[in-house]
Length: 500
Picture: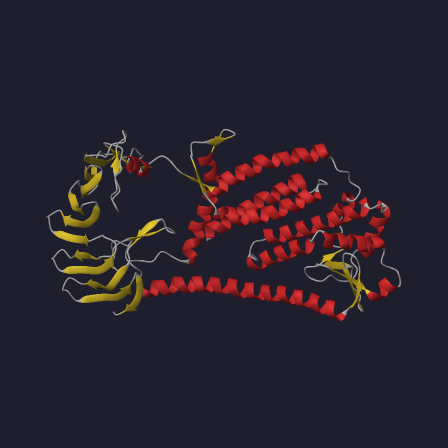
């Protein structure tokens, strides 16, 4: 969610900047209206859409992969910095294997309460704004019912016994009754408001007001609302002048209404944002060449935005397992390549096949050493690309610390056993088949069971892009005398009860 918010904000900001720099001051108001609405829809939906491209492809000499990094870097940076504050990484029950062991009750309750607090604050503000939005619509309805009506060809005049600025909403134009009956409402005012009605500007305002309710925390929504309503005024002003009204007389009339009375929420008011920019726009002439050139410039900008925010690499270089670095090096470079596995028709569930640089499943020994002293760190044996065993060495003394053995049944990953340097079993993961009950056990140096937990086969969490262990039943931690230190009960990976 954090990554989506950051990406959508970046895209909305980019498109709004394009509008301000290239389009706002051009007399192409119909196109600008479409662009602003498109920018809102595209900015909010594009980060949710993705399609595959080859990362080596390039546009204007820039690789698509580099474009993706420009967007992903700030999004991931914000996610990594803010995410832990919302939902901190839980600590494990035992002090090892923290990556897959569930959190204690105290840690979980803290992170959940923090997240609940933020969601609660968002919910309260959203409900308040939604009520205020509905209240504004209700106020308009009450004004319609309270006023006297006069039907026109394209609108219904609502004459009110109160001081009010001429304004419109959907098919209604709100006027002060006294001014209308005394003839103080010029034809240009009615023409201006009828343009709002004819072009359905109220729907744009309702749309952006609703988005403000949902995305109230995004300041760009308020900037978009102002730009959309100002564009509506440009369109209405243009319509009045094109019907033959004097530019100077019309400008003076607008100035008379400037700052007078109040406008209702979500309506289109004739004196909205009566600034020097709006007055200068009225006599401005349309330039087909300048407007057309700027419109054409949008094409590569939108293409680049699409490639940056909507693509994901496919056919990207295989994930490199080992290789030269500043600290470590290996005797062979190995890769994981799902596309190559498809070509060779290798279907090993839960088993990552390692390939050499020639694209063949690796058979042999992979040694990883420290660059500074050539000290052996790991010694891993592969057969047909599948890991069989792995030895871990103390980086300072070079002594064997532990050895892991990997067992398989057919094409299914079955078991991991970890032995100490004395060949004593110290840890075991058994039965990784989905839907079957497996277990994870650890032992103290004296042979006493240290930890045990049971789970149904690992499942893939597409949100986290990682494998989750759905623990079932009791998870227990023992001391070296076999006395229970901690004990919890789980169902489908969820903590149900902390027994001790």
